[in-house]
Every structure is written in structure tokens, then in C-alpha cells.
Length: 533
Image 1: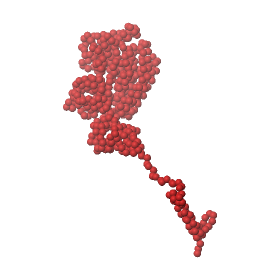
Image 2: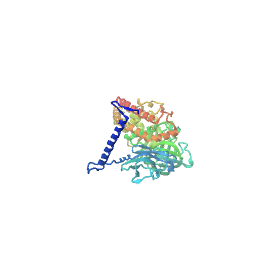
Image 3: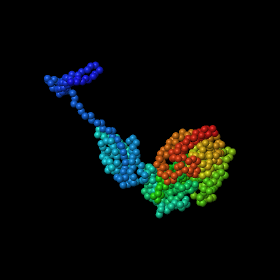
Image 4: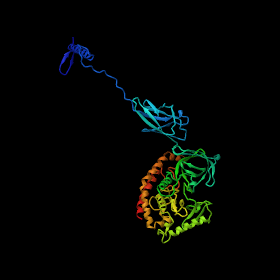
């Protein structure tokens, strides 16, 4: 018989020897296993050796509670035309409706990590349980270990701004600035301001150059005095279109400076979405009107509200007079030319200018100081100079007021949509250079060293509030985040030339950035230039 070999590195064995060795090894292994089995079971010769623990299956740790998806499905909410999916950021969930709808009874569909979902202890069923989302709603998700996490859901209606619904009788158009059109107005406050139930009103066009723009400004007169957008009771309210100011912020930031000042009154305002006969008109800046009133320009029983104006801007029934320097339009009260009130105010302004341009003009007793409230003249000057408002040098909307027996006060502020470098036909395009200082009254006042010192000291106050005002720009820009997009969707001004914009930028964010940059550069320049006077 042929003999086979298995070769190793150290030696060789025959097949028969190899088989015998395997049998011996097998016997040893079987015996060892038997001994180990008896030991493990506590058996064998009464042995009391240690018992090995019985292996157990590990218990899985539950996942941390989490909201993975959240939405309002159109198929489960008849008030929706399309499904709204929430944006989950940390413990916040945000949704925005494309229009104003009833959000008081919405069913949410959600996907979670966890065992239960509750609101104030009430279990929620995805796609079934309805809730009122007109205020933030907090969901609590709990897993099997009892660990919970909360998510707050906020639903924004349309742009988040109040919504004004104007309805004219028979759907009549608002065609001019002279004739009122009758109708009704109501306000959905959208959680920002109080609602206003439908009430009767009249509305007409307003403005000068702004009336010729595609987006029309309006004046509305309510049938009775009411709070409007939480502003104080009154009848007349202005709808500023802010068409030429693509940021829609320039007037508002001028007002913010007015609130910082000691001027007697600065208009209150609120941004709102406007619908006219159920058609969206865009975002408007709603303000109080510059007029006499205890909650507006307080003139007492016999005061005067006056405006430096131009012939071609006068209405047929305006009463005005001319000094040696300006045309003065008497805005309040209504009076007849050459009556006693007319003679009083024309004489007062004549005497003021006579003192202002006299050789003793800086004399505190016999000069201009006997006629004017210097603090108001300085505040009005600085706000107008900081913003470099193109109209405020000598053209229009230069308001001042006086009560007989008191001094002339400058203000209120008005018409700053072409301020902050928003003009292409004059030097105010640029942040460098004086502008209002060349107003004839102010040019003379700046010849008094005491007036200059007071201006320099007061400028520091505004400069110290620079960051406050920059933050206000950011705050209002964020408030208009969705509104500006909806407004531009119908008026399409972003990225195209609109008179008299000096630059054309492609985004709203760039427009806001330019406003801030211009303001910063302007303050830096004035800080040096005023200090050098």
C-alpha cells in the first residue's frame, strides 16, 4: 500500500499515526467539556464553586424626543389652498400663510421621535387634533423613558403686518387729490395692533411728486375720531406709499430721530398691508397727519402752524405771505388774508427776520433769541442736516409753529423719503458736505459763535445714539422682511431705476446696507466738520 505524508516545518508523520493522534485529542476535549458543564451547573462531588451569571439581552436606550417634521396639510385643512411646512430651528417651528386666513382651527401633521405629543397636557393626534394658532402654541414630546422636549409653533399671517381693508362704494376708483371717495375701512391687527371693525370713511389722493408715481399715496378721513393701528384718536390718517424709497425706512428713521429729540411733536406711524376693493396695493407707511390737535401739533386756542413752501405747490384756498426770505404757507388756523390773525403772524415773522439780519443779531436780549426757541431750531437743524434732506434747505415741508406770547418753534419733521442720499439731482446724494446750514435763516444763525457751540454739543448727543439708530434700521428691515418682497412682487422697483434714486441695487438687503453705510459716513463727516467750525 502506498504511504502518504503530510509535511510540516519540523517533522513528517504517516496518515495512520495522524488519525490516532486526532482520536486521542478528541477524547481529551470531550472530557474537559463534561467537567466544565458540571462545574457551571453546581454539580459534581457536592462542589459549591462559583456560578457564572446567565447572559441577558441589552435594553435599548430610547431616542431623545424630537419633532422631525411639522406641517398643515391642505387635505386636512379646508382653509388652505396648499400645504404649509414648518421650518424647525432649535425648539422653534415657524410657518407663514400666503394670505390672511382663519388659523383658529388648524390640524397639524407631524413626525416625531417619542411616545406621546401633548399641548397643555392634552394628547395630540397627528393630522386630527385641531388647535387655535392665532397665538404661539407649545407642543411637548415625551419618550418612553419620560424625557420631554418642547417646541413652540408660531404661525405668521401673510407678511406679519396689520392688514387694512378699504372698500369704496360701488368699487369707485380714487382718481384725484381733491375729491373724497366714500366707503368703509376695517383692520385685521394680525397680533401687532388692535383690530378695527368696519366703519365708514372717505379717502382721496395726496402728495405732490408722489401722486404722479404708480403706487398712490392717500389721505383717509374716518367718520369719527378713533384709534387707528393703536395710534391716538383722530379722524385723518395718511397712507405713505414710499415708492421712491426702496427701503421704505427713511421717513421712519427720521421719526426715530425726532423721538430722541426735544421737538414738541413727531408723528406716530405704523407699517401695514393695504387692500383696496379686495386687491392688494402693497405695503404702506401709515402716519398721523401734520395738523393742529392736542395729540398732534398743540397750538392751544390761537396758535399757528406754518410751512415754508413754493408757489407751484399751493392749493387754491391756501393763505400765505412772503417775508424777505421765504414764502410762508399758513396751514393752521383757517383765516382770511389781512384779518387780525394774519396781520399778527406776518408782523411776527417780519420782526424775527429784522432781528436776525440786524447788526446786533447775536445779542441775547435784542437779537434773534427773543423770537425763537433755540433748542427746537438746533434739533430740527441737526436731524435735517444729518439726513441731508434735500427739501429741508429752502424748498418745502419746513414746518414751524408758534403760540402768541411764546417763541417760534421748529417742527414737526416731515417728508424724508428723499433723505439719506436718496436723490440724484442735488448734492444730498453724497454724505459729505453741509446742506441745511445754507438755509438762509441757519446761515445767519451759524454766524453766532454761541449758536455754533450749542450745535456742536447737541451733535454729540445724536452721535452717541448712532448705534441705536443703526439698530433701528435693522429692526425695521427685519419687520419688513416679508412685506418688502410682497410689495415688490406687484410694484417691481427693486433692481430698476425709480426717480430720483442715485443708484440701482439688485436686492432689498443691498438697499438697506447702502442706507446704513451712507448714514455712518455722514456722521463721521459731520463729527469732524462741525468740530472744525
